[in-house]
Amino acid sequence: MKKVHMNSGNGKIQFATKTLVDQVEERIINYIRDSKLKPGDTLPNETQLSQDMGISRNVTREAMSRLRMLGLIQSRTKRGITIVEPPLFVGLEKVTNPYLFSEETIMSIIEMRIALEVGITDFIFDKITDQDINELDKIVNQGSIYDDNNWPVDLEKAFHMRIYQIAGNPFISQFQKIVHIIFEYAKNNYDSHIKPINKKLKAEGKLITHLDLFNTLKEKDRKKYVAAIKGHLYLYRDLNKKSK
Amino acid sequence: MKKVHMNSGNGKIQFATKTLVDQVEERIINYIRDSKLKPGDTLPNETQLSQDMGISRNVTREAMSRLRMLGLIQSRTKRGITIVEPPLFVGLEKVTNPYLFSEETIMSIIEMRIALEVGITDFIFDKITDQDINELDKIVNQGSIYDDNNWPVDLEKAFHMRIYQIAGNPFISQFQKIVHIIFEYAKNNYDSHIKPINKKLKAEGKLITHLDLFNTLKEKDRKKYVAAIKGHLYLYRDLNKKSK
DNA sequence: TTTGTATTATTTATACTACAAATATAACAT
DNA sequence: ATGTTATATTTGTAGTATAAATAATACAAA
Image: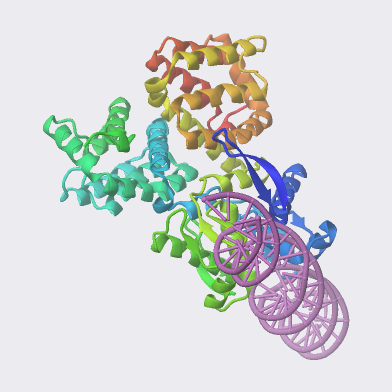
């Protein structure tokens, strides 16, 4: 196995061993990039590739299997290997698992989610329609029987996902859908941190509910919405550092 | 091969065939989730897994090879398979390739990038230090010899990456770093759309340069910065729909 | 000519065997 | 207690074989 320097992003430089499969995978990805291949273009079949690279077909298959999983290629009997337009978040979806993530990772993911949700405000107000309002209204109504900001997770998810839908960006929706489970996990895990904060906010009349958010949307009041969504979400920033 | 319904996200329901490898991969991922395994926990070795599932070691290896690529597991001689904390964007990095993406995809990615950059404003102002200002100053100085907003791609990237660094969220930085190439690609590709807009803005004194952005940061003027970053970036929204 | 059917050849998907290389563990010696 | 050697286990790579799917071809019928 080939030894290579690995820059793991945090500044540390590690030694990692690249297997033949790793190398082949990298080589094919680079080949696709460098040759500017497009969806519909084809690659040589497995036997051919293996011969060309002088490796076992097993190794080629492992590498191609990875690319197939990522949605970069498609393999069909008798047709061989075709390049396709890959989805962005196949990998993210497979690795997203709160039990594997450190506290720090979880906080960063939540923060990213918040940044995205705040950052799409203008998109929302550029595109919002009466139907959006109506459907959000329905969701808010379903939630009316629950305590402020103590909605069932599915309803909470539905509300926010419906807002992302207004912005109309498929990747933002996909991303938020995937990482939502991390948010749920953190809410459960840090319940003892959140509860008192919510209580205090409510006592002061500063708690921002989904209904509040909905109303600012209905009134088409962009400034109020920005303030509201921040109030609604910033609460969850650095949850782990908040005192109980 | 197993036939399954696939909801491809856009509402269409397709038939897709799941290979044995796909099934094993899914099964292992679910097993890790359901058993709440944590980094450091181990899985049975390849031969054992294959026996347990009654399949060839090849198939097991292909599935594990995928998980290894995603950074979910690590395989070592004599130790077998260990669960590790995966990075989030391994997959994204591998599939990101402008030549594979449709125009629509490219526009959506750019929009997501913009949303993120706008959405981290408060994080930036919460955390910005003098050193951040100093280092940004250096970058802006390097850029001073170039035309407004016609910086070399690397310098442009360095400037924005340095801003993300202030926000201090590793995933936002990683994400933006990965998708930056899409932005560059679009800027080249839609140059004829961008040029006249920039020209007009400049004539009207409304062009927002990196220097302008920097100054709002230096002055710690949050409101001006928000307006500036939007002015700087919104230009690139729906590039394909703008008239030349 | 067009349409349908059977045949053939190609290619992926899966299974199985074999062995080299790495290395944790155990056994042993100092 | 420490260092060395031997052993056994496990991954990584190579190779062969076969089933299943299917594109391409040839052929037959309308």
